[in-house]
Figure (cartoon, rainbow, N blue to C red):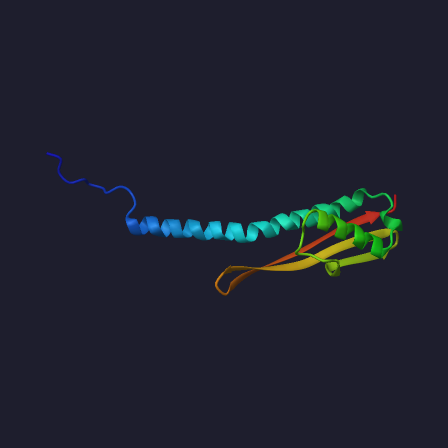
Amino acid sequence: MGGTPRHQRGLTFISFALLMAVAGFFLLLLFRIGPVYLNHYKVRSSLESLKSDRELLEKTREDILKTLEKRWDINMVDTVTTKDVRIIRSDGILRVQVAYEVARPIMGNVDALIRFDDQIEVERR
C-alpha cells in the first residue's frame, strides 16, 4: 500500500536537543550581558545630556562630577563611578570622557569583560 518514504522529514531528538542548547546559550548571554548594555545606554545618555547645560564650561570639575553622579543615582547605574571620569579643558574646549570595564559571569568560571569608552566635547559658543 504505502511503501517506505523516500526522504525522512523533521528533526531527530538529538538534533532538537542541540538546537535547544544553542538557543539556550544565546538566551543566557542575552540575560547576562543585556543589562550591562542597558546601563551603558544610561551612562551615555547622562553624558550626552551634559551638552545641553549652557553653564558647563564655567562649572568646576567637582560640580560636573556631582551632576553626573546624581544622574547615575537617579537612573540606578552601579557599574561606573566618578573615578572613571576624565575631564580635560583646553583652548575653550571641555572634554568629558567616561571609560570603564564591566566583568559579568557567564557560566562557571567563564566571564565576559566589556569595555566602554565614551566622550563628549563642548566648545565655547
